[in-house]
Length: 165
Image 1: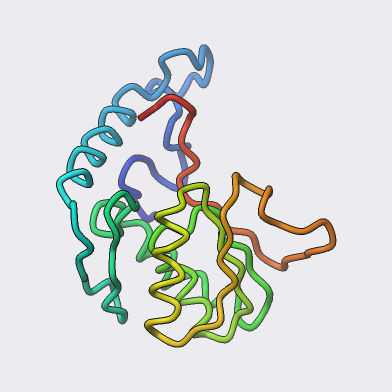
Image 2: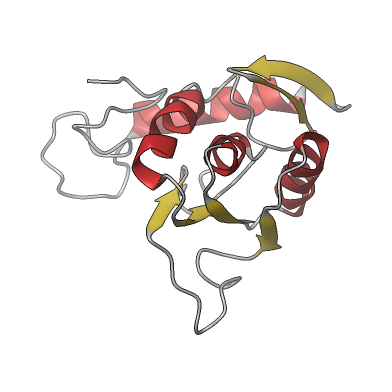
């Protein structure tokens, strides 16, 4: 089982540690603190910087989730192309675009969205840098998707509880 930065695939990242799943008020306090720690590290980056993430040397803009801190991004990036293949994929919460890059490289038709304008700019920048035709849009969850659009695979990254940060 692959361990994610703040949870695992067999336990929701923000579930109460006692696994009771009840009383969501205050649930996941330990995980919330870890997320806040990551944000503090991310805030230290005030200029764009490049990092090798798997086979791509991506640019990371300030204020965008970095695969350096959310290590499950590389795992998903390396795993999803086998599932997606050349199908149509929607990535919600694209951040730097690393998962979209891997899927586009494998032949997928990718639409990527994020609520964060800096993340939208970051994914566009990395898609252009590597020559991928990825449709990148700004919006909350499905808000950036047209009424007739359909996808074979939908992948959502780190949907954080409102007010966490």
